[in-house]
Image (cartoon, helix red, strand yellow):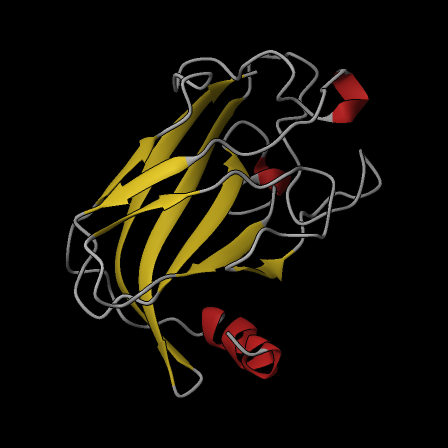
Length: 172
């Protein structure tokens, strides 16, 4: 994906009017993550995280014409960090694939793995460390973390959302 399209993509994200019409499946593909509790060490560095990162994911039943997956990491228990407050980024995929494995993204960094592009850095760089993704960072107050995954088509600098699903990451 060319960097020149990113500003247009960011603008399109603010104007998404297409309603999701198809279902697809997002699953945790990392055995350390069970969806109930954030694994030890995967919390932010401020609270002792060691190499924290998102879980790897398996996305299947991807709607036709999807060429981008969008990930919005959130803390449901803390309103300022809900709705993508822990970071928003996209992952380019082949439009012909019905499923794909999505690798982990390191926390506290702006360096994303190949195929990823940042949409919005996490919203609270003064709380912990700046980066595209801030790992769970509630200090163990049992906050509820999740990721919203959107299947979309980016074409001619316009973004059309085909479907979205929510995947629970666990409590910390």
